[in-house]
Every structure is written in structure tokens, then in C-alpha cells.
Image 1 (cartoon, helix red, strand yellow):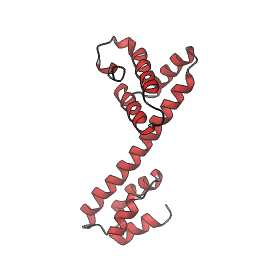
Image 2 (cartoon, one colour):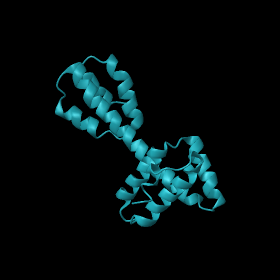
Image 3 (cartoon, helix red, strand yellow):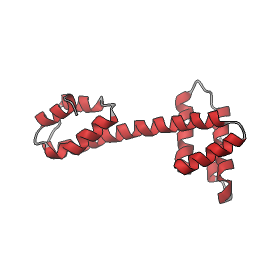
Image 4 (cartoon, helix red, strand yellow):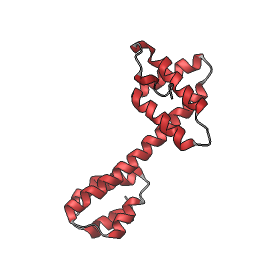
Length: 148
């Protein structure tokens, strides 16, 4: 737990790489790999806390390269990218579920079910950009079922 809490402890701004590394190392060593959901949640917390952008990922990758530990960086980044992608899909579905009834009234259950099953982010974005142009649930149904 102490390693996971490292980001909250006082450290010099220039030491963020070492703090991040120690925190990730602690999660990878101490959380049972068979409990992937828990491990990924902890890693996601760390990555979000440190607000790693492209430049920071490259700095961290270079730091780990010096230690011959690049595989761990790539694994953590893949976990983060997957979680971010899943979050965008969830957010897009929630946006549709919130906005459509405001425009058209009560949502038909089959449309709600179709929206909850959407997993294609491009399709979600397409529907979000087009929904203001449509005038009823029938056209929304066409957007959900038809080609982009």
C-alpha cells in the first residue's frame, strides 16, 4: 500500500520518474497477476495521477530502457490505453443515453439496448455527430442499425 501511495508523499518535482517507477514496480510485484482487474485499476490510478502524456511516456520509456525494463513500460501503457479506450466508449454511450431522450422524449427499450451494446467508438462518434440532424426515433434506429 505504501508504494501505491508514493505519489501522495512529498517528493522533488524532478523525482517523478523514480516515484512513478517505484509505484508501478510495487503494483506489479505485490498484486497477484491473476487478479488482473485489481492490478489494472491500480495501474490506471497511477497513470491518471501522474497525467502521463506522450512526452512523459517517452521519458519513462527511456528511463526504463536504461534499466533494460522496456517490456514493463509497454505492458503498463497497453493497459492504460485499453482502459482509456473503454472509458471513451462508455462515455459516448452515456452521452447518447442522456441526450437522445432530451431531444425525442422517452427512449424505446430496443434503442436503449442497442446503444448499451455499442462497442465501436467510431460508430458512437458518428451517431453523436449526426443525431442533431435527425428528427425522430426511427432515424436514430437507422443510425444504430445502418452503415455509417
